[in-house]
Length: 228
Image (cartoon, rainbow, N blue to C red; front, side, top):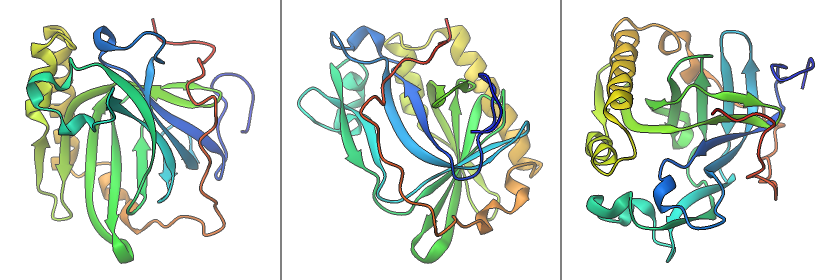
């Protein structure tokens, strides 16, 4: 890492953790960590304007699962956010993911490719603006997402999950309104073809010298400062 202090910039090739806090605090089992998604990534770029990271194929990650090991999305929507959960290690299969995030934006933009580096789509993940700490960035997912195709068409994703999260109390009305407003702001960027969509990231390729970063044993460690 270059520089000093909490806001130090990472250098290309540095390894950090991209994490999400658990939304479902009411169903968290005793002793479970507040972080339920953790993905080791490699820094591509870190400036005042943009943090870009690469999650390579074969990366060992942490994801939420139900207590019996069932994948969360296999659970019916009615109980998906109330069934007790834990976390499990798993491997990210398929193509890697390039994640782009501008400081302060309540979303990040992910790029997906099919085999042979055939660009598939952009994915706008609506989320809490990321908190930086020495080992990476932390956020909280806001359920609602947007898919953007190479022809610039777009559509909302996971509106049923967004509604269900409100129904079971994971998101209050004020927060839901702010999330929808954030989504509409992202749509304005998409329709105006602003950054990062216009910046040619679909042609980016990872440094072939980069190794897949390992998942550390203390992936759930608490940063020096967490949001209140």
